[in-house]
Every structure is written in structure tokens, then in C-alpha cells.
Amino acid sequence: MRAGDIPELQKLKLFADMTPAHFQDLIRAAYVQTFPPHVDLISEGDHGDFLHIVVSGSVELYSVWNHHETSMATVRPVSSFILAATIKNGPYLMSARTLEKSRIVLLPSIDVREIFDRDSGFARAVVRELANCYRSAVKDTKNLKLRSSLERLANYLIRSHMRSNEALVFELTIKKRRLASFLDMTPENLSRAIKSLRSYGVQIDGTRVTITDMNALLKLAKPSPLIDDYST
Image 1 (cartoon, one colour):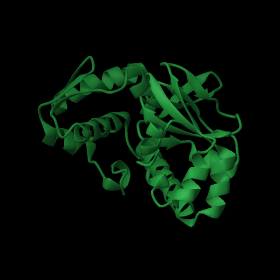
Image 2 (cartoon, one colour):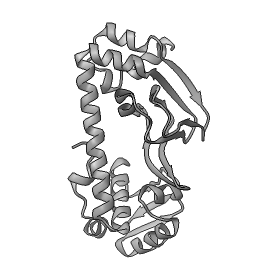
Image 3 (spheres, rainbow, N blue to C red):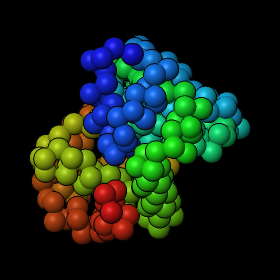
């Protein structure tokens, strides 16, 4: 690992409270690799030998069963995945692939577990990170089980609107087929839902989203911080 890569790692809350000596021990055997788009990084079922950290680009987490594939999440800089498999010393429950050219830091899981046992600040940060992941999983489950497909799409667009500095015109950051998978919809259902949103003041043309009646969209979506706010 180059010295210039270290500040990127230190942006993570996961490492913020570590003692400098333990941080140096942790990154001693780490390395950075640049991957082109659409490269498989890990496969579900394989042993979790490395903790991966995305420092540039983006990575899709997905799962496959019985010839069916679903998108689980998108990891953007600077974020780690999959921490639970590393700490538990268990198999990956999801696969991961690059969506674009990406730089990934790989930390040997055995070193992560060793420092977890030695550094209380790091251990507390790991617990907080895993707690956040658990709460996010609960919110995702509530979103899927309590809402119709149209409501899920409406809330996704509201969250995208918020991430775009509340712009009323913005671009979808993922392809529609991936969006349908993430929202547990078929591409055909997504297409019908997009047409249905026109009556709520939303026009989607390609990847461009235009919201002309935010009040109508909010009335449909009924966003809740206990589902949609991932900071709580």
C-alpha cells in the first residue's frame, strides 16, 4: 500500500478511534488494487478472507439462488464490505462486482480480527458499524414487506431527490433493470409503475427524473424516518 492511500482509509469511522500503532499493524499486509468494470470481487459462499474497502468507483452487492439474481446494495467510497463475514470468520452471504473502474483496499480478515481483540476503539467502531448494518437490513425488510411496488419506487425517488440536494430534476444513478431488482420488481412492473407516477407529478425519461408535484409524490409515498432515513 502506498503512503498516499492511507488518508483514504482514515476517512472511515471504522478506523477513527484506533491507536496509531494498531492502525499501522492493521494495514501492514493490506494492498490496493484497481479493477475494471464488471469484475467479480467475491462470491457468496466463499470464505471471507479479506475486508474490502471501496476508495473510488462503486461496487454492487448481489445474490443468486436457483437461477434468480437480485441486487442487494451499492457500495460507494469510502465504505467497507462485508464486515460481518470478516469478524465472524464465516462465508460471504453476498457476491460483489464492480460497476465501474474501482480502487479497492483489501485488508486480510485475520489481521482485522486480531486488531479487533487488541484495540477497544476499533472494536467499538466495528460494533457500531454492524449495528448500523443490522438497522439498515430491518428498514429494507420493512420497505419490501409493508409497501406496494409503486410506494417503494416513490420513496426511492424521494431519497434520490434528497441526495441530489433536493433538485427537482436529477439523474438515476443505476440502470432501470438494477433498480427493478433492488426494489424487488420485474422490469415490466417497474415500467408500469413509472407510467403510474405521471399522475403524481413524476416524469421519468430514460435516466432523467423530473418532479413537478412534490406534494402529490409525498402523499403517495408517505416516507417514514423509521424506514427511509438510514442515518437513524
